[in-house]
Length: 483
Ligand code: NAP
Image (cartoon, rainbow, N blue to C red; front, side, top):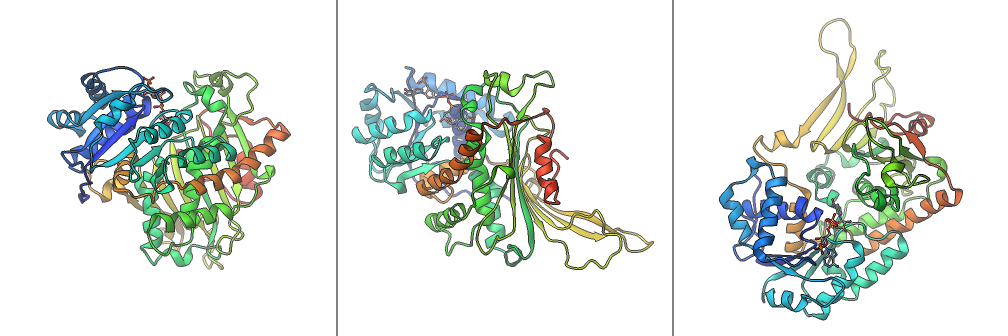
């Protein structure tokens, strides 16, 4: 099955921070892929920008090198890359000074969609937004895209929102969470709201609990200083896991419009109960496997920052009363795996004698490493000799379903094209981000006040024992990581 490509309108896209890590690894390769499949009109212009002075030709060389490094050689042809590079230009600006802004203004064309991608540190979001407005580079229709992290807590998120809204209106602001650009995450909405099979079961009568796991194998080496001020709760739960929780728990919106969808997500966040410390297990990885400990990577021997967190979260509304959502994320775990597992209740009365140990139905939405959906069912063990039961998974792997030669699209490809199209559905609204921080802040405050130490865990494990105990106390089990 080949996916249909709908070309977008002609655009001028300025990528601030175009020489940085994110731009080279994700943004520019994603734009290249969209060019390659024919989604980008011939008149599209991509202007890279950073402080460093360089010619447009030098920037094209930098982008060529990035694509050679980060795109598999099987996934592109040399002539196509040359065509893409012709779409690129470069202007040096200083986000906090005056240099370069007039040059940038001179590159912008009339009657084009204008988008500004801020792939720079968050302290530069407000200065860039203000200068785009002051130099009349931004029009009332322009779009501005900001990367994570969006704030460090509620107060800083509010301040950032206010600063952006000084120059742009909410319908122009695209706060990116790349998890929302993943096929499976959008498929969760399709699965729930385009099928009649699941929605009648999607409530506390039929669902026992939900597990959301985002496990990583990498540590924080290389970005330890940043991470130590953040931790798993701020870096992963407040944004990515919260988004996954919202899409799983939200009510069906009345229509598929950006605000209708985001209204429902905000309602979920507002329904979250405060989490007591007894329902949280925080962890920090030890040294092992030839690598240093978290504290060594963070350069902070007394750090209390968590590189792992597991927590039980309750959504206080009619649909979810009594159904815990267990969230878990961490660094240096056994495998790189992200999934949402919706675990159904056992049948009310089991007629088969040998059902012990069977885990019952679970719908697993896999985001990483391979995207797909699995439904765990209980069936008869084949063959004669009585009726024994066994577990079988009905598997829908997207790579298989969509054909072997269909390249898995990166989340950024989808999201950047949504920006050009002016579709905010998969971007976080200002009030949504603030609601998430309003829930997260007191949880963090409580452990900071208590000065609790995170529990140590071994690299390559599933996290600290205490996370397992949290589940055991509830008579449940985590799904295994890396099995
Ligand atoms: P980076 O590698 O440090 O790149 C920063 C970019 O900003 C460079 O191009 C730099 O170029 C430019 N820059 C710095 N100061 C500037 C100034 N005063 N005026 C104009 N340009 C300036 O950072 P990154 O890792 O790409 O991250 C960019 C943003 O994305 C951050 O907000 C980060 O939190 C977020 N993010 C990154 C990742 C990732 O995987 N890297 C993932 C998610 C989110 P010059 O030094 O030449 O100016």
